[in-house]
Length: 78
Image (tube, rainbow, N blue to C red; front, top):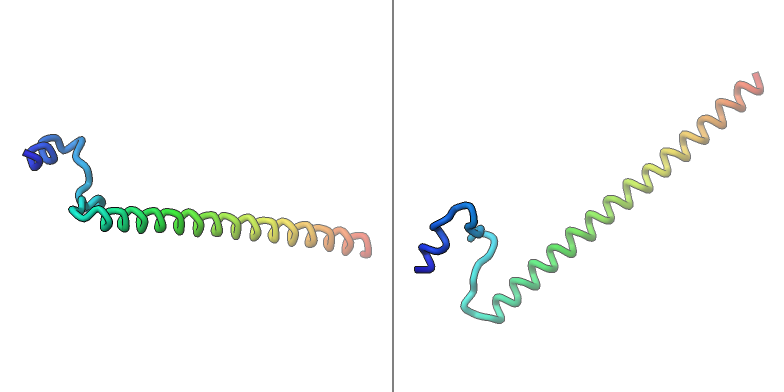
C-alpha cells in the first residue's frame, strides 16, 4: 500500500534518493544532523566567497582610483 502511495502520482512523489527513512531513530537523527551540518558549511562557504568578491571589488575600485589619481598627476606634471 505504501508503495502505491509513493508511486501513484509522479508529480507529488518525494525524491527517494535524498531522504532515506531509517528504522533506527538515532540513525535518522544523525542523518539530519549531518544534512544540517552540510547546509551550514555550504552557507558559510558561500558567505566567504561573497566576502572575497566584495574585498576584490573594493581592491579593484581602490586600484582604479589610484590609477586615475596617477593619470591626473602625470597630466599636471607634463
